Amino acid sequence: MARIYDVAAMGNALLDVLAPADDAFLLRHNIAKGVMTLIDEFRALQLYEALSGTREIAGGSAANTAAGVASFGAKGLYVGKVKDDPLGRSFAESLSQTGVQYTTNMAAAGPATGCCLIAVTPDGQRSMSTFLGASSELAPGDIDEAGIAASAVLYVEGYLWDSPGPKAAITRAMEIAKRAGRKVALTLSDPFCVGRYRAEFRELFDTRLDILFANEEEAMALFEVETFDEVLQAIRNWPGIAALTRSAKGCVIARGAEVHVIDAAPVAKVIDTTGAGDQFAAGFLVGLTGGKGLAECGKLGALAAAEVISHYGARPEASLKMLAANARLL
Image (cartoon, rainbow, N blue to C red):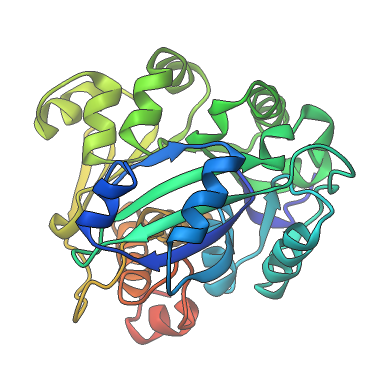
């Protein structure tokens, strides 16, 4: 099948609710700092009422990456489940406005559209409380088989592994991608997610993955090591591409003996780190599907991450295509 899309991104379709908060707020509401915690609908309503100064944006990790891909001028497809309710319709409209193709059928019944309540502390850390809602109902029958087969890369967020239906849908999508000769990428999402599914992620790493995205802490959790150097030793014989981010230290891109250390792109002030990894993946994948070398892919990822941490929200506010052109990366 001819290639139509650069990236097919698959993840939890959520409405992001962002709000400034301090550490005292996190303690008062028993919110774990800097990670994602799954919650039920009742707690979601409680936290929503407690937060002030909220900003609501259609989100979810893979959806943010798809929006970043579109901002670079590349073609993205998104796979994720919402309910046919006001939030779900808002999500679909918001995503389509970014230029991303969204074809997943909305649920007519069942849980409401999911949401992610993000408390952003003054140090830029985001603490996420997530009600999966309808996104946990994603099933193999929701997969756009033709779209996956026509995408250069299938990109999957690790958070989807938290529900059996989406897990089966991922397996189906990976089978389709592999049969079509496409690349499969996984982002580990967060260290707690790795802790829950380490054995399964390691099996994917050994058998199905072509590209791994992880930050330093997630990578150490995956390989059960205590230093970043040990991570590099663990992947040195892996034939795939490991794109490993290290916050202010930049990133390391490795494929066998080929290793590139890329500095973080400069940013005047870190406002909100929400979506930094999502946009890094967008830039990297746009470079990779565009035929760029690994070092250039890493620089595109760093540029996209720098843009998104300079403001609230997990999606770019400036044209990433224009920024990359000005930096002579595209």
